[in-house]
Image 1 (spheres, helix red, strand yellow):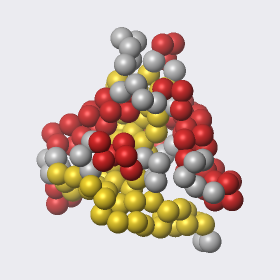
Image 2: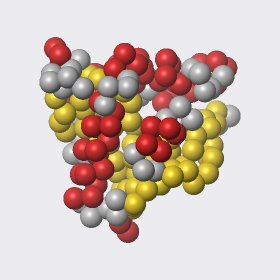
Image 3: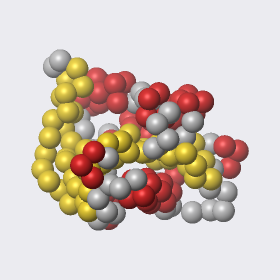
Length: 161
């Protein structure tokens, strides 16, 4: 990770940059683990930034040189001490540099500070090793209903904070 990385809370004005990050990341990084027939239907639905999440104060972005968005992600929930990792992505040209890990450390630390003691996530098949390296354990496979007739296979994971 270089010295030009800036990690901060997202603001509503980051919506376009986050959406462009999701659109760069998902098609390239998920392609090895999902069939093209599913990708063509799922990516347009998955790669939409969520304004409410960006405005929640619980979503973070990592920017590199020139303000380029390199990673984003956050969390929601907190009821009953349980939170949920939300909409995490890393630029495909910035993987394996510790940027995603730094972002997730901020997300998990923020959730812990808010009283969350257990974090859940719905990981893509591609992201399972990443979350496992962060201490998450696999709970089991799930199908995420994106729209009627479009189900996206994922893996439910969890870890204590």
